[in-house]
Structures are given as C-alpha cells and as structure tokens.
Length: 132
Image 1 (cartoon, rainbow, N blue to C red):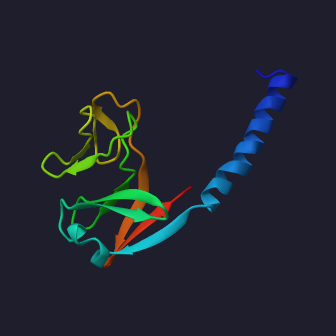
Image 2: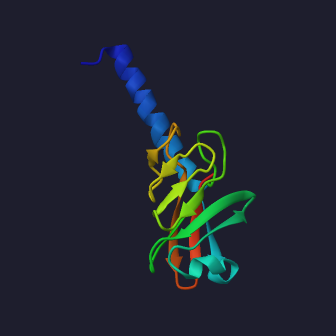
C-alpha cells in the first residue's frame, strides 16, 4: 500500500514517463535505402555497412523477405562486428563476443546486447527507423 509520499512519487513518475516516452518516438526517422546502393543485400546471407545520417549501420539480408539493421559497434570494447552467414550470427573479432540475429549476447564478454534498428524490406528498398 502507498502512503501519501509514495503515491505522489509514483504518480509523478507515471506522468513523466507518459510525456517523455512518446516524445522520444516522435524523433524517430524512417530512412529508405535502395538495394542498388547495397548490392550485397540482394542475396540471402549478404551484409554491408552503410553510413546513414552520420552513423554506421550494418545491414544483413537474413531471408528472402527480411533485412535486419544493427549498430556495428560491439558493446564490449567498441570493435566492429561482422555478420557470419554460415553461423547466422554477428561476431566480434576482438574478444569473441557473438550475438544472435535479434541482437542478444550468445557468448563472450559483451555486457549487453548489440543495438538493433527497426528495419523492413519494401520492394527494392530497405526502410530503417533511426531513433536518435
């Protein structure tokens, strides 16, 4: 049960969250990249790192119908990860961290998952949502 102070703290926290969380999403930007700019993504298993809005994004064609997008920087010590098509995961060459296609840590010293971006394939275009 909340006392008066606890109730006020919880209420203020809920109000702040209700205001700030949608505001963060309001800054999200959808960007389109043509597959002609990323030849490697025309085939399943292909990957390429592209600069979009001053940031590097690692794109991976994981199925005929889907493309995934990642921040290519390993959370452990900022090395660049690469897609291993044979193992179907992301791997860091510096300290052997590996990440599942959804970004979760599979092995190694990485303290947290790799950052993923919302991404879809629409015809001959990749649509990625950047939220910063």
